[in-house]
Length: 75
Image (cartoon, rainbow, N blue to C red; front, side, top):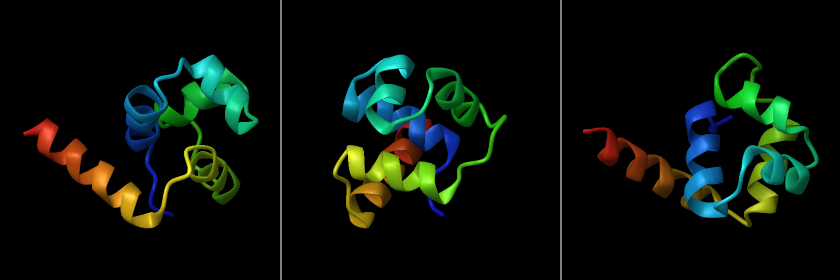
C-alpha cells in the first residue's frame, strides 16, 4: 500500500477540498473512521485505499506526484 494517513489528509483537503464527514460519505466510510486513519489510530486497509483512489479518480502516478508535493512543502 502506498497511502499514509498524512497522504489521505492532504488529498482530502487539497484535492477533494472536503471535510472529513463529506469525504467519508463519498468513499463510504464514517468521518470518525477517516479521522482515525488520518491520525494513524487505524491502519489503512486495501479497501480503504482503493475507495480513496477511485473516489478521487487518481492513478498511481498521481498519488506519487502528490506525495512528492507533500515532501516539498515539508521542507
